Length: 164
Length: 283
Ligand SMILES: Cc1cc2nc3c(=O)[nH]c(=O)nc-3n(C[C@H](O)[C@H](O)[C@H](O)COP(=O)(O)OP(=O)(O)OC[C@H]3O[C@@H](n4cnc5c(N)ncnc54)[C@H](O)[C@@H]3O)c2cc1C
Ligand code: FES
Ligand code: FES
Image (cartoon, rainbow over all chains, first blue to last red):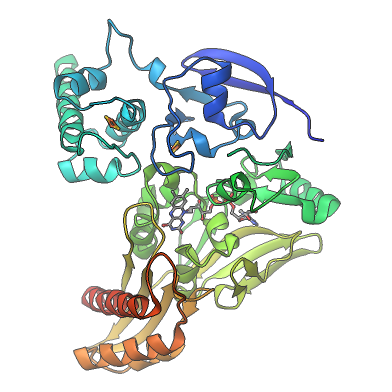
């Protein structure tokens, strides 16, 4: 039964159109159709956050959304954040402060942290921990992730001040 | 973890949803945020040949504040947390929402899905019973209202018919002090035990009290007798103990991976005492 449907997504500013079964998970569509393999798959149950992307301005877990639900949406994935020779402030901060070890959780961490700093541009350490609670890391013990995000926040705030 | 195949629909109005539900009967289900339904579909514990997405239905959105508060079914937990006027008129909603799951899940999970789901682990049903909320349903024969306190029959068994849609929840703006206290193993976990409490004061005495408990039976448990234990008292340690004992008689927890029955009763007593104390301080 159940055929395919035509799906339109705008990802990192680029329009994509493809045909897929509605039950395909968004994370699989991103990785396997659009070759955006930065969004990882960990638990596949909505717990670990490695699949976090921004969809229509919300941080969401792309393993817990059918591609059909995302039809017509605008997304940002970690590939839209920076490039190896032009890192995003958050990516630079994670590198500088050892916010990663194996790196598996990092794309989800970066995506959630980016949204968190939009929600709360000047967070306390406690707000960072609470705001990142949907992202698990099995390596770092979180300390350096929190440090990286705090550092990125102050970097972004001083850049904003300088611009004013 | 790939669910069984389904046809997908995204109607633009409620009539469209209801006619699809009528056409496909048991084979159709609505999806709101999907954060309860998708995990069940992945595990193939739910098979849904016709999936009807509610995301484009204007009638299900919006928060109306006032003496009577109305929250559209598609309002997310994040919408509740961000709504400053709701946070001042009914702060218990924000306090409870912040204890549900994590930021990404709260961007997707809706009030309608949380109360319609019927999972005893969901936090909103107990909260709605504490608020004495009314659920507004719409089906092929029009709308009807059901009290939250009459809505839940057993796990995943509710008063809602298969062809009815949850449109909104409504309740009077609560008066007095409030607390939502939840014990969980970690962030993103359902409650081992949770308590919703609202208390109002008349001078130094408790005027009205409302208590409901979460995940301590196969439905949320509104504790009328426990609430009555507080009314007219000065909410002393003794009065709180009486209310807690009465609550323990009303719940019926089952042993599972969150612990044995005795432990759950202990956790229930702790969360309720804390919730009453905090609500009373705020009253
Ligand atoms: C990791 C994780 C942790 C979580 N932790 C918690 C927690 O601690 N506490 C908690 O309460 N919840 C928790 N949840 C569940 C989350 O809050 C859900 O989103 C919520 O329970 C259901 O809302 P939904 O919009 O996602 O509903 P859906 O999953 O879309 O729907 C759930 C059910 O309700 C039905 N339904 C949905 N909307 C309507 C409607 N308008 N009318 C009629 N029927 C409808 C659907 O058909 C389905 O059967 C968690 C989820 C995850 C993934
Ligand atoms: S893979 Fe999506 S939350 Fe773990
Ligand atoms: S760096 Fe290895 S999981 Fe986070």
